[in-house]
Length: 343
Image (tube, rainbow, N blue to C red; front, side, top):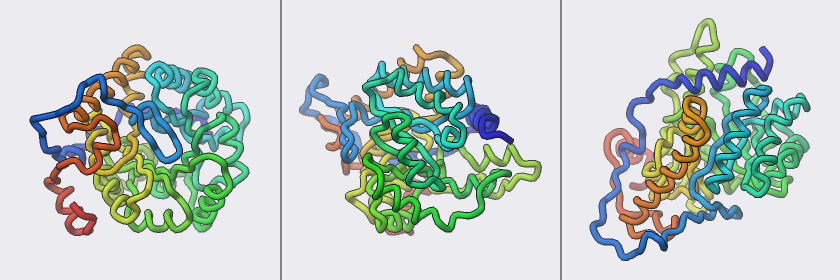
């Protein structure tokens, strides 16, 4: 099957995502504060993600590209929405454009529509340093995501099977490109053990890409004649993954993604130590099922939700949310206690 057709199948299955049930952020309770000493107009959504100064804690996370005119149209609208709302935008994996120059326009449309915005390039962990540099240059990108998707590849009928050089290649890219490199999971979360490995090779940006959003086990299983359904519930929930990373790498620049539903989920992620939060499937469904105008309205609504949480917690700046009073319940509490990540 061609990469282009596979990209379109991924979009179709992602749009038809089944309910994941309990979201890990439902088991994070923020302790309400009845008094606040700040004015709404003094609240700033400006966010610092390491070297990156972002106008918003929210960004459009990696989705698509490389699927011809259909994915180019999606990326065009996402870029317009990002431009209109002042948020950053990550493209989907550019590996198809690295293999077929005709697909480059499906990604480059993002920079054309949003010439002054923050744009993240995206490659797989199989990419070489040379390919990483081409991906960054292709978009004049401000940062580079390297996605980790071992389980997805193993379930994918035509997926990779050799991962023996991946860590070495990531290290080479981290040391060899001139923009921040964000290591990103694709829905299975980052553990404390993986975090230590990434820290050892110089990684300082991690997007946890936790369980709770688009489930690529299920997506790839739908493409198989004989699915590996036993892995459909595999992964580390997003809120838990943020705690796993921060427990062993407190200074890491952490992005929360994977099933983020609203601004309150984003604020909870910041309370747990995240520096930004990404949304993909939720925003894509609104764009496809409604329209661009509705997507812009939703992003503005998410910003408003985030500011409400900041207001009631007495945080004028996003970094002030870190460590605000909270408790864990249910499976999340049990997980964190057994993993000794600190509650």
